Length: 115
Length: 116
Image 1: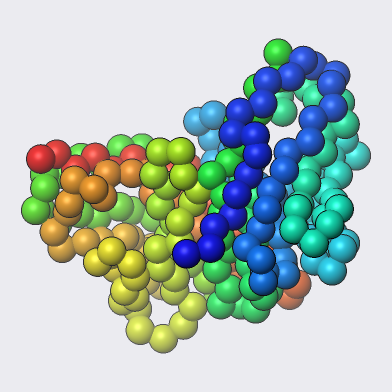
Image 2: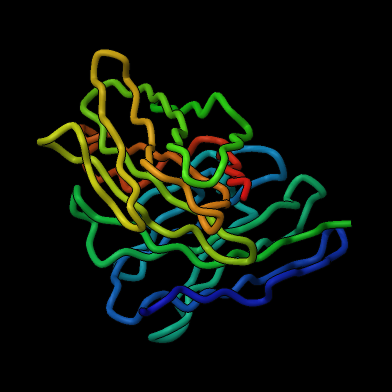
């Protein structure tokens, strides 16, 4: 069964550094998403992406965040200058369509630790 | 704004017994409801969904969930638990009236432990 993959599984960075989290969505999917989960808290929506542009973003997704689909397979989340509070598990997801009955398929996550 | 509550952080059940993982939701319109499961070091795996129609929906691995509009609940159930069902379970909601809204809102998750 096709899966969403994410690299790295764990990223440790110093405050103020830039990080790029990578995702390979399921190959025929058209909609891509990032979510995050701070330890002990809920999974929170960050952003959705379709046709090379952001479709929707949450309040969390401020100017420090950006997303890109640099080629036909990868989908990246960049945090420009990391803060301690960015430490979380980041999940990438993809879906075939945006139709109301869609399911989003999630990757295993990247644990980001900002020190 | 939509929200999901999973009132139990952990549920313990003996193997072979029925299990229930609770979820309640709040949306301003009609909900689309989902259950996902997460095994260690794996992503969130889709289990089942309620869109419309029968209140009892069946999903993967013998799981089912019952939609109750009056109680705004969508509890996950299984008649006979297996040790391999031990995992983290997430309930999620998407509001149907949010045109162009793609985001899922998740609960905090419930850790299910099935005891042999």
